[in-house]
Structures are given as C-alpha cells and as structure tokens.
Image (tube, rainbow, N blue to C red; front, side, top):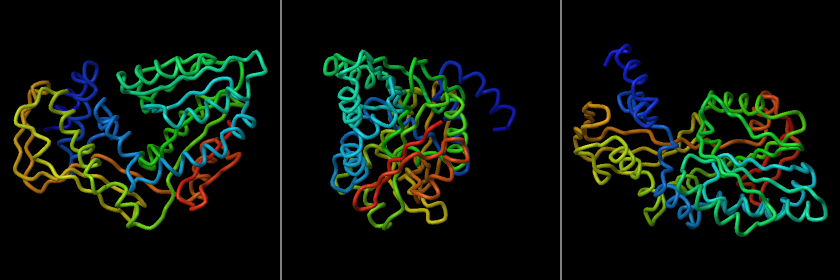
Length: 328
C-alpha cells in the first residue's frame, strides 16, 4: 500500500468508521498495532472490570485505598463544583469522590455536577443511570466521546472544575502522546481548575507481568476481544480470536508493560468495510496496549512542563501507585 492510497483510504473511512481508519493505519504497519481504546467495547469494559478484582491486579486496590483515605481532602482543597471524569468506565472508584464531595457541599446551596466521559456508550449509559438513582443530589451528565481526540472541550461551570483521570490509564499513552494530552487538557482547563491523575509506579517486574497475565486467563480474553471488535466492526471474514495468543512482556528501555497478540497460524482475513485482505504469518505479533510505569519525580516533571503544577501527591503504604493533584 502506498502512502497516497493509505491517506485516501483513511480520509474515506474515518468519517464513517473510526475503527476502519485506525485499522488501516495500524494493521499494515511494522509491527502491526491498534489503539488501546478498541479494547474497551461493552464486552471489553466488562472484562476489564473483572480484571480489577483479580488477585494479581493490584492497581485498582491501591488506587481505591488512596481515594478512600484522601477523597475528603481532595474535596476540601479543590472545592470543585463539577467533576469531569475522562474514561469513566463503570465509575466504581468515582463513588468515593462523589461521596466526599456530596458531604463537602451538603450544607451549601451548591449542586455538584458529575460529567463522565467514555467511548463505550452502552457502559456509560448504564453506569450513569445507576449513579443518577444513587446520588439524587448530583446532576449526572454523561458524554459519549473519545477524550484522546484533538479537541477536548470541557463543560463550563460557575466554580472550579476537577478533571479526573484514574486507573493508571495515562500509562497507555506514549511519551509524545502524554505530552500532547497534558497540553490539550491544560488548554481546556481554566485558572483555578484542578486535575487528579492516577498513575502506576515502577516496581518489581515479576509483579508487573503477573498483573497483565493472570492465571485465570481473564486478561488474555480481554486482549483477544480486540479481534472480536475488528471482526464485528469491520465485517471481517476468516478472522477468529482463538487464532491469537495473549502475550505480556516488560520493556525495560521504555519502563512499560506491553500486551501483544501473536498469530498462532497464518491469517488471511478479509475486511468487508475496508474491502481489503489482511495477511499475517504465524508468529506475527500485534501491539495492542502499552502501560508505562512512572517514578513520582518524573511524573511531576511531565505535568509541570505542561502547565499543570503538582499541588499534592499521595501513594499507598506499599508505594505501588500514586494519585497526583495538579492545579491549572
């Protein structure tokens, strides 16, 4: 495929089907790659929710413990009247923040607004409906959007806003993409707004790999679900999830875990939406996710360089995970 034909295909496919554009840009690359967001369709989001409860997967427990200990302090420091959660998923951990902010504002006339933003409309709608019932004192305003896209407009508010990005998802971004994400976020926030970021910290590589390759095989199913997303979203023939193995490995040079799908056999899949055949030989690996791990100092330096200076940073007693509060 020439650069010109690739560009033409992208321009044709992108407006109607973002998955088609990403597939064209990534599956014929060397190595083949796909954006991590396509792991999170409805089934993928449910599988990831299951992953967070696995014994090997420590990040959710560590971040939850920090939120439980510090949510009231975050509410008191920020006095935010709106919480915008980027990539909200099921919003499970967010309840700790919502509880703290409801308690903070209960004696005032201020009514908190919670704006969950996620690419999975089914999961977002279901989570938002439940939260609206459980938190009648909060206005829940869900937004179906891809917050990684170039434009990141945040809803206006009379008082301070708190943008929240939990779960260590920032590690899914390359260094270049992180810089751009911080820059765009800083541009969307107003002076006096806040940003709360959850990030996984560097630790023993054995624990890291185990967290992304659990014994029950849930993470493997989660990773292979990317093939199902391609099959259904691009009307694929001769493409099967069982033809791929899940691989998780540590990349020491980049301080990150990488998830790959390795073809068990030669694959010649035809994508009806693309009107193109994708051929990969047995043993070919497709990069589906990166998860960078940070030091607290490096993380603070990145945020400060983007105009998001750190106000406070907390970690769990084991030093596994960090929650960082920045002020625009």
